[in-house]
Length: 238
Image 1: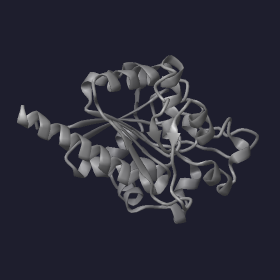
Image 2: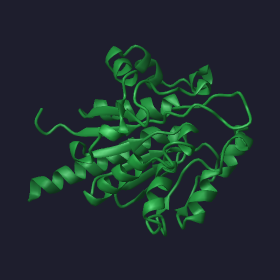
Image 3: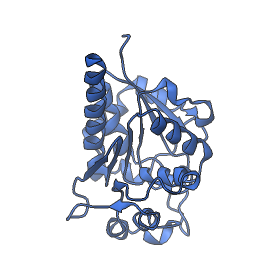
C-alpha cells in the first residue's frame, strides 16, 4: 500500500524503581491501546527502544484490573508479539521513515527516555519535519531529553502527563527520581489535567498531542490519527 502511514513507537528499556524491589517498564495498555488504534486505521507500527530487543513490561499492568481488550488481543497476536520481542535500537532509526511518533508510558521513561540523546535527536527531527508527536502518561518524560538541547521548547507548551496526585495514589511517589508534572512545569510547560484523577484527558498543541494517564492512551492515538488524516487531506488539496 503506497500511501500507508508508518508510526514509530518508542518504548522504555528501563525496569528498575528506586528504593524498592518493585519493577517497572512499559505500561502494557498504553502501548496496546494506541497500537491497535493505528493498526485498525491501516497504519504500520514499528517498535524501537534505547537498548533494542525485548522491553520490560510493568508487572502491575498485567494485573486483572488493568487488562484491556487490546492487551488480550496483543497476547494472541503473534506478529505484534514478535515485533515487541525484537524492537530496533533507537540509534538505527531515522524520522524520515515515519509519519508520526508515539511514546507510551510506564515509569521507565522517567529514567531512560528523559535523557537519551537519540530521543532528543528523533523528536527534534519529527518537529522540524512538521510530523505529529504523541506521548501518554510518563511518555512525555521524553520531552525532557528534547528540552536539554532546546530549553525554550516547553515554554508555554500546552500539555499533560501523569500527575503528582496520580503518582501518590499509585504509591510510587517515593520510588521515582522526580515528579513529571513538577518537572514539566519547572521547564515552563502550560500543564493541565482532568478534574478527577485517572479520568481521560488529552491535550493538543499544534502537532504535539499528550495524554494524562492509561485511559488517555487510546484517545491520544485517535487524535494523532486525526492529525495525520488532516495532513493527508491537505496533501490532496495541493
